[in-house]
Length: 141
Image (cartoon, rainbow, N blue to C red; front, side, top):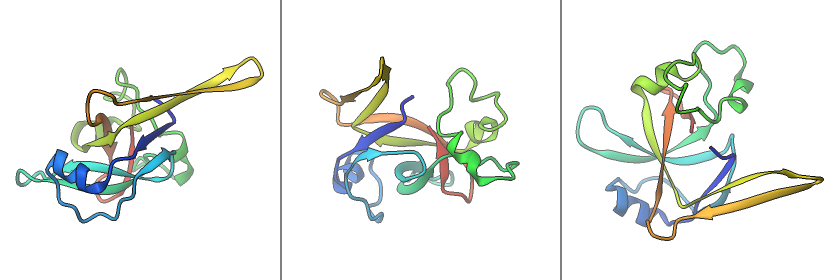
């Protein structure tokens, strides 16, 4: 997973595409970074309704004593999310979708930073998986 992504679609388009309520104050964002509020889609467990809400990117497990662990738990690997203590409970029962329309990846090439951006061209949204904590508005991608 990347360390930045974008959701540049208007909230009306998000609500229409995902069939959600439209109560969140959302503005298009082009450079969403860890620790910032992000838009998520949650399924109501008691009835067939989806909700668009905000969560902070960076999971803080229930056993954590220091909230700064949220900076280390921004991404979960598909291969280990079900078994790692930080993600295990959230992976089993508290999933959500993060709509996105592009992401950035980067690294160092020699002495220069190299960043690339990929975006949607043939589909309206990317559907990124998220794992969260009940009663908390924090998650990992």
